[in-house]
Length: 149
Image (tube, rainbow, N blue to C red; front, side):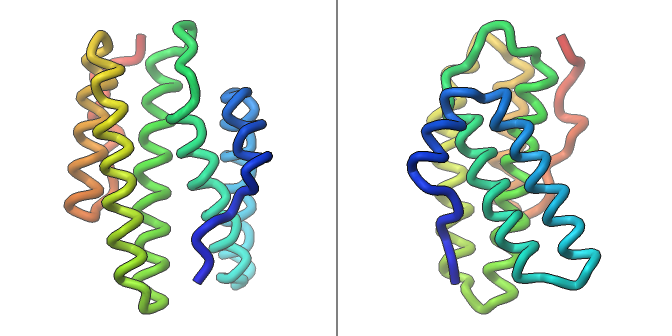
């Protein structure tokens, strides 16, 4: 089963422009939803994989200090939710080892990023919650963020 959805060039382009990447993630998620509604599971998987990799690219890109807490929260929640969805799709296809690897890698990436948000306790707390959700294999709670700044 496919595990890479973006080319290195596309990833680099999106990493340089997180705003564009966020837009592209939403577009890919919408396309996945439409494909599911039309019963095209394979195409939905492709779009969701693309959205997941874009979400990862966004959280790994340089953090603009002007980015709102709400936007950062949405980035981390999208990443966690997409990781869980992709893992469930791999499990449904009998690829439990790939699903487990994806969840572990996602947790490790979040753990590496968490210290960078020490000055933003709401985001640091949200990252911990998303990591716990990945560990528990359940959807992250959007209510983890106390309030947008």
